[in-house]
Length: 209
Image (tube, rainbow, N blue to C red; front, side, top):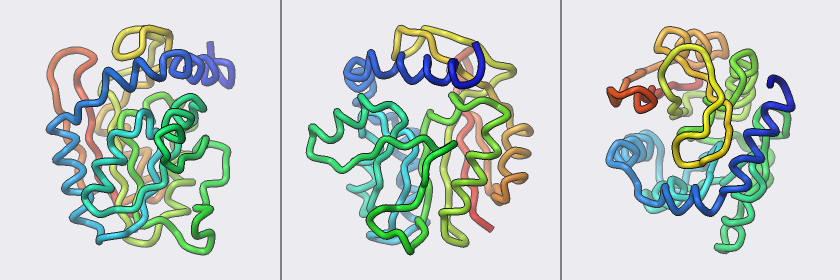
């Protein structure tokens, strides 16, 4: 399954299991905690971050605790509903097609972008477009953090925190660096964490140069 139908199936799988996913991912891993701390140090108190793939809202809460202002977004409406039920502002947003401008401040670009364990669901041919669009709404010098599963090729799988089929597109350091640089981002570092299959992650820090 490819194209729009495949993307919709992945979104539907997360939507059907949104609460389960949230329950299973409430704990903030040390690696994510450290990445958030580093990200917050690069920015200043109150600076505005566009989060792509907010999910259950765990990362946004940690970023706000670190002093940042976060626009929560997710392509899955059920995740957004959970966040709104918590009293949080959140928007259904597809970074491939939707207007990324901040409705709270349309004339201002975001200071940074955060996307943890999300963009590996974007088709390989579409990721450069997504990265270019994210850069267009980020201020010059603003950082972007993203993480994706490391590997080769792509697959449909029902393993992990959601027991329903989702498309995963895997990246290695060279291919991810190429995608970022072709979109105009300057890569500061790409690190690999984990060793077991389906547990190796690329952690990326790049800047809008």
